[in-house]
Amino acid sequence: MPQIAQGRPSNDPLMVAEEWMKAGKDVAIATVVETWGSAPRPVGSHLVIDAEGRFEGSVSGGCVEGAVVAEAADVLADGKPRMLEFGVADETAWEVGLSCGGRIKVYVERLG
Amino acid sequence: MDPYALKKLNQCRRERRAAILITDLGDGRDRVVVEGDTVAGTLGEAVAAAFRSGKSGTAEIDGRTFFLNVYLPAPRLVIIGAVHISQALAPMAAAAGFDVHIIDPRTAFASPERFADVRLDAEWPEEALSRSPLDAWCALAALTHDPKIDDPALKAALEGGCFYVGALGSRKTHAKRVERLMEAGVSRTAIDSIHAPIGLSIGAASPAEIAVAVLAEVIAALRSRGTEAEKGRAA
Image 1 (spheres, rainbow over the protein chains, first blue to last red):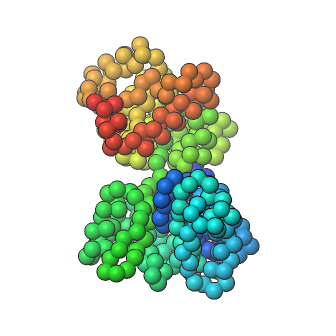
Image 2 (image 1 turned 135 degrees about the horizontal axis):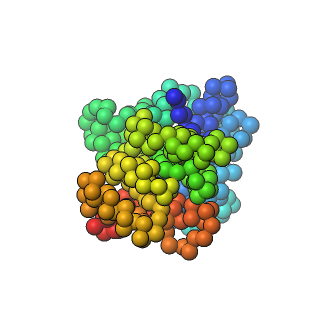
Image 3 (image 1 turned 90 degrees about the vertical axis):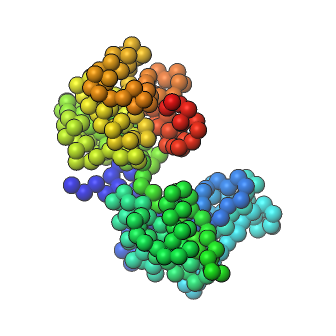
């Protein structure tokens, strides 16, 4: 008897990405690849985004998701992966509000 | 990411197999390595180390930067007893990322009406566990208060190397359980690793509060695997 992810939440970002892909949607995958200091989400965490800006998962405690979703639109448009950095040391970080004092590096790529 | 890599990775995760997604951050190419696969050279050493530690991270090899994302099987929580505490514990544990499996041979308790959206087996633990063997990624909570049902499951959990084994009941109840398990041939060290009375001491009163105490204790055991704190407790 198949027990596919039964009893687990259906909001697993990579499972959602596969469903979106099968439904013919364009999907971007963002992954935390490095952290320094008190980063809210560990290395390896995913946020997946579709072309309409819908997303699942997280790469921070909600501080930089908006900026990553915006960048994902560009990644989907030209297909080129991007490395994003957020931290309190630069001005962008204040704008998007990574207020916990940590720094994170997020890799954003297109699926397929 | 390569769509085939994503499909293969998700398939491994469904089958509870450890896997690593290796991405070349220079050109974006990626591939999935399943535990047991052979990977040559320095990258192979980094892959082996990542499977051991379970930690994701970057590796610099021959002037190229690779990101190794490690995916270990989701922890499973096996609950013996389709009781009131289990009705609160199952959804909480699922929300925390556990695969939940409830076993109780008493069909009046183990009814789908009482347990929607959870894997439920209305049979004896020996039967249910023979199909889904316990492993090091499993926690087992025995909640029936009935030695006929709880004891064989506890024995199986200790033999299967579960990262957490807990049993409901007072200290007096547990003392009798210890005697029975000793008679059944379980070692004293193994018996001493059972969390009993079950749950962190938070003064839990209602079934839902006991469920919180149990889940917190299971998470504490999961996150302290192999550390001194856990070894000290088990000793």
